[in-house]
Image 1 (tube, rainbow, N blue to C red):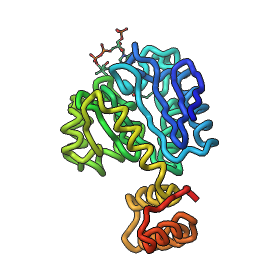
Image 2 (cartoon, rainbow, N blue to C red):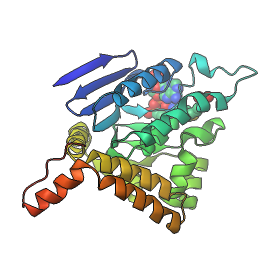
Image 3 (tube, helix red, strand yellow):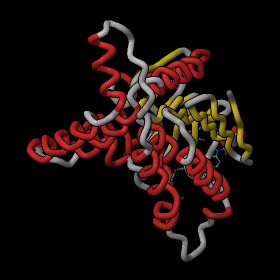
Length: 265
Ligand code: T3D
């Protein structure tokens, strides 16, 4: 069963328990305009109100996303221009929504991911990249700093030395390097990216979704917690996980020597 909602700058497709959200401004490498941000907000609300158990974020054409559209009407260098406004209205809420989605969010990075586009991909739970994809912290080239969570994600995932190098040199790194540095989950051949992402999404959507939501919550909390506080977080989330139907099904299926049928309940 498949359904599609039309937007000007996005494509949103529901297939069973999966949502595929495609950024769709290929001639501008899917860079963000105000209209696209507005549409993305609506699309994410649609997804949140659906019964989705995994989603894919990808881009149309040769780019994943080149970050903010520098020619957009909302990015005019007027005297009172303040990049903090767009961060507050658009990028920060977007990253928080991706982190809070109660199911796995897969980024299928089909091509160049630059500026906020790179950091939106890196905020997703599982990042698959096409072999030809590149990641660029392009901000310093225009006198800005990594946003969309970049300074948080990079320092934790690749360490301070590489994070500063990426941010200050603003040079592209290949998908293979991103993999090597622990930024992403997997690199696949370009022509296999979309099928690999779909396969991954179907696989995750048939798993214990509530446990996945708790895994996200616990791991995000771990970034700032002491071991002692984190043990408490684990206790609370494990307590909730052990009340789910999927937990009962998992244990029962194991004892009965059959595969589990998880329903996300
Ligand atoms: O106020 C706020 O919103 C603050 C928030 C900021 C968040 C940010 O993301 S800041 C960073 C913004 N992004 C960039 O600075 C990246 C700019 N783009 C590039 O550096 C290059 O395009 C790439 C390295 C990504 C790719 O290079 P290449 O050679 O493969 O492609 P290209 O020829 O540069 O781009 C193709 C087309 O896309 C071209 O359009 P044209 O000339 O064919 O009509 C190019 O202008 C357009 N494009 C690419 N990125 C952007 C863009 N147009 C507007 N804004 C872009 N970001």
